[in-house]
Length: 307
Image 1 (cartoon, rainbow, N blue to C red):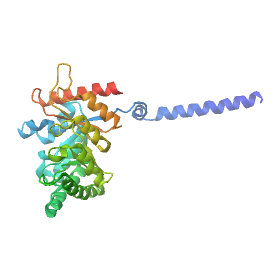
Image 2: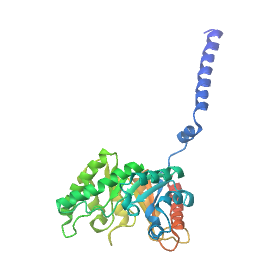
Image 3: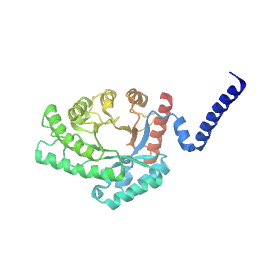
Image 4: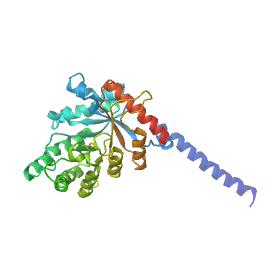
């Protein structure tokens, strides 16, 4: 091969490299950084219930929760609680304002926890179907707010056997999840008292519904007395579309005093969960904001250890 051929080949190779470099330089710096930056093991959101005392006590306006979430707590994702805007579920103007305020603060709406809409597994079919319809409004509200998910309660009649309750909850939950699918909204259940505080029973229900938008919201703190909370979370994690990071108080080293967070987050990591862990501070030793921030620090510390 003569020198002219070699020179031409080198020119072509150099031109290709230069073109690729120019393309890279023209790319948005944020896109380049996003591609290079490793994704966290999980993301952190704030459960609005953490501010329940301030909200119920009228010391904090519901419309201002996104501002406090971002500015005071340094968190950019929010989980709403339906209890603080029950009368606004169909108020499109209010929901639009709520969404705008979150967007203005750079806060992502994640989900709505929904209570007091009737038992999704009521043995009375008319009441069960009414509960489904009551929850439908919250699916529509979640869609308007930009949330991906609503959390409902897997409640039936405690007088019935666990199997009978499961059958009824599966029926109601499947109907609701089908409505959710029409709106691209997940419908998930949390260990939240009564029979739902049994992780094994919860898994049975989700498997019975057998729809891709139906899953669980494991809560670190809401298991029945004597039930192994770590086993319960491990049972529910394969179906998790969110996790509730419950906290009550902290020791001198910043660790949660009731729950072994390193063990819990090890379970979360083992399940390959990369979604949101929603902080739900329920203690009374720290202020609501300080309790949230203490939980956030602990989550970030252990996330870094696990990375």
